[in-house]
Length: 121
Image (cartoon, rainbow, N blue to C red):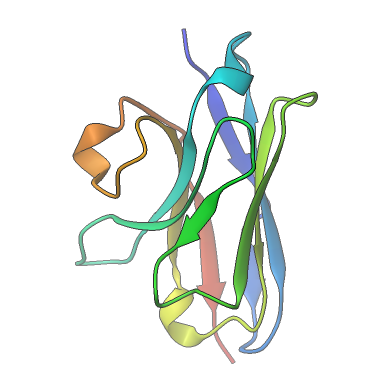
């Protein structure tokens, strides 16, 4: 059974930083592509960033490129999302997910419960 648990969300001001973490209990963690998605109220779930199993390749949505960094530590079964220079429009529930290297949420089979990120002054 896949268990993904996100943490690190919170209420921050514009320009602040947050680091999200996703702990994965699977023994095969290091074999899978991972991604972070987000979903704002009234909007569809969208990909934020993805990273290959070995961590060597990552990609980002245009809206976060240059501000967010995805990384993983396979020894700790964890994937991270460093979010810098946060903007109001980054407000959403953030999810980590396991799946193929695609940008479509429907292609991902396993999801965490999500962590709320709110950017407000």
